[in-house]
Length: 361
Image 1 (tube, helix red, strand yellow):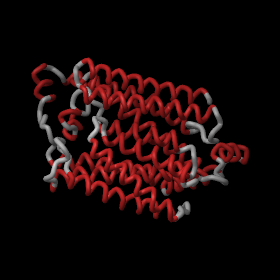
Image 2 (cartoon, helix red, strand yellow):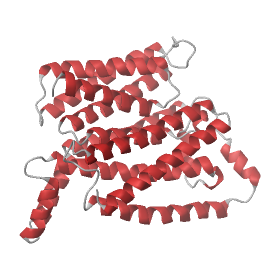
Image 3 (cartoon, rainbow, N blue to C red):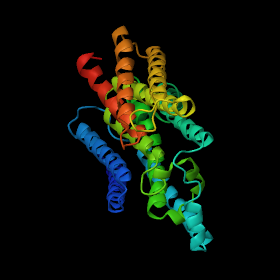
Image 4 (tube, rainbow, N blue to C red):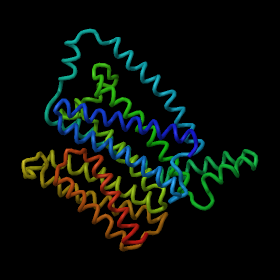
C-alpha cells in the first residue's frame, strides 16, 4: 500500500472515529435512536475499511483500495474542499447574530412526518445512487475508452505503465472499480464533513435548507439518511467490489433493489397505507409495495447486466427472490438503523455469500 493510499485510509478512519464520537454524544444526550444509528454507521465504515485492508494485505484480490491517478484526485479534492467548506462555515457564523434566530430556525417545521412533497424530494435524491451502477457497467466503460484514447497520445512507456495498473486488456472492471471507489469516496467525505457540522455546530451549518427533507428525529444528533446511504454504498463497494465480476454485479443488484424497494414502501405507505405493522408507522400496504417493486427492479437489473456478463437462470430467479424476502424482513422489524444502510449492507452481504459459496458464480 503506497503513501497516498495510507493517507486516504487514515482520513476515512478518522471520519469513522468522529462518527463514533457523535454516537456516544447522542447516548449522553439520551437520544437512543441516534446512538444506535450512528454507532452502526460508524462500525460498518471502520470494519469495511479494515476488511479491504485485509483483502489487500493477504493478496485475496489483485485490486487494491485506490491507485494512481485516483488517489491524487482524492487528495486534491480534500485539499480544496475542506478550506472551501470552512469558509462557508465562517460565512454562516458571520450571519448569526441573535440566539433567538437560531432557535426559531432550528425548531421550524419539526413535525413527526414530513409533508408528502418533501418526502418525495427525499426519495428522489436516492436515485443518484443509480449512477454507481451505471458507472460500473456503462458510463465507467465510456470513461475508460476516453482514458485509453488519451493514453495513445503518450509514449509507449507511459501507456504501458497505466495498462499494467488497470489490466485494461484482460479485465475492464478493474478500472471502473477504482473509478467508483473514487467517486463514492469523495462524495462520502464531503457529506460526512457537512453532517458533522450540522450535528456538532448546528448554528454554523451552511446548508440549512437541507433540513427541510430531514425528519424530526434526524434534526439533532442522528446522522442523516444521505450519510447512511453513502456509508452503505461505500462499504459494500470496497468489501465486495474487488471480487470481480460477481462483486459489482451483487452491488448493483442490492443498491437498485434497496432504492426502489424503499421508495415504493415509503411513498405507497404514506399515500395508501391503512393497516399499520404492530405499533409502528409502517403499513402492510407499503411493505407489500416495497417488496414487489424491489423484486421487479432486481429482475430488470439482472437482465440488463446479463447483456454484459451472462448470468445463469437459477441466479436470475433466486437472487432477487432472496433479496426481496430480506427487504421485507428488515422493513417489518423497523430497526433504529436507517434503511438506507441496513438494506444495502444486508442485501449485498447475503447475496454475495449465496452467489460465491452456494451458486458458485
